[in-house]
Image (cartoon, rainbow, N blue to C red; front, side, top):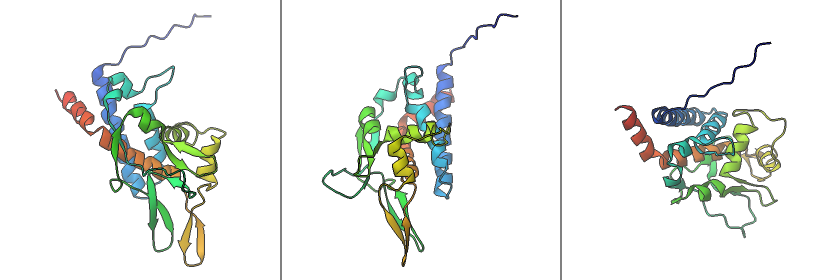
Length: 216
């Protein structure tokens, strides 16, 4: 039997990494346009690109870490303050839109107070809290959507807090038209859309520098 040849990896160049950055920002923008047109599942594609850009593990480095810029970015935090004394569910990145026949979640986009914070503070901040012990950070929402809920993989099970919020309406928000009322759905997907808005704004200067470098 022939001996299996060890695979040799060739390092990617800085030029390659800059191209990947621009590609993934383009992916995010394209998915945002589709999401805003009603294709809510595009949020899962957004989650995959955000994971590529930002998520580090013991075995792999995020693209921004490989580029050496992750710690220099000031991340836009557009979440409303979370008042723990408020008994109502907290969804810090999204609000409500009342339509002619239903009520839906809607991203805040640029219509909320904002600040620039470090990556850890941004990534680890709670953005959804159902006040029943189920909370989600930006990290939780992105990784669950990408790794478990169909972005890059469909896992047999979902993390409990994500499942309660995304599937069981544990936020307990209802709306409708007249006497017809139902749960207001997909808070995780609309939150991902707002995370995309934050990241696009946060990386604007770095993306422009990458595009300039690629044209030289």
